[in-house]
Length: 380
Ligand SMILES: [Zn+2]
Image (cartoon, rainbow, N blue to C red; front, side, top):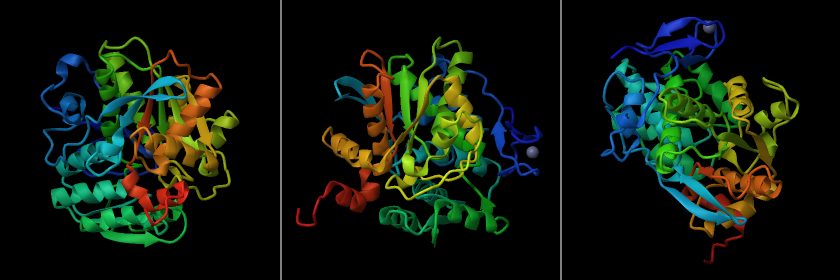
């Protein structure tokens, strides 16, 4: 097995991926070299997890830690008269899509000899990394906004991780984690290219679950954009493997109150544009400063998709409608439903197309907020 290599997005320097690294010496973020291409013959069909695609992953060996992540259900429901496929990433081991990236990232870090780690998160990635490090026996410290949903903080603490609630915004939690670099390894899911190596298996799964076909449209709640980049990487590899002729349009769904991608997209910019961030009930995508913003914008443009930013008042109706379809998700994930309504109403997507909405997190992550949003009292 050849050792994977990283290249810096800032200065182009190349590193062998044989030790724990989180960024280039120049401060730029690192990306994995392109994959070799993937074809259906390499699928381990007896494995009902993302490890059925292990041959496509840039790891040196089989996983040392796994909780059975991946191979999540893809279910069909009617939405505004159209049949839509909902991808239930909410049914991962820790209740959010993050496990796809975490499992692959952590196995890489174990392979290259990582010690204690720390990380910052809005909550779901922290819960995922805390859970997987617990399973692997690695000490872990998580910096998280103090205002994160209580259930997410409890989930992190229950795994035995050291939880550090930080007053202020999501970015303040990041700054606290950056300040701790040196005390332990900064295993940031937003910087680690192996996290995106894991999320690319979402592309493989959608293609396989749709009968080895590519959907026309994929809608993804987007904070930092790891699912957008993973989808692009996965479809690139299927393309290289000769498996697909078409590509899906990718739509990044944001909460209008904190929409870095929408701010750039709306003025045709290819990089960060300053904007005013306000609190949003979609806490999982409240990202003032996405690390890979230029790459995510480029991926959206290449796919001929776009950015949809939904208002706060659109989120609760979508959450309620999803719940009544048997899809209990957190407010962040419900933004995908709100965006579906918008894109079907304005004709951007049509009922004759194959459309996937990715539901990124379980409603159990934010039951208190859902109770407030839907007016569900304590007397039930
Ligand atoms: Zn560099």
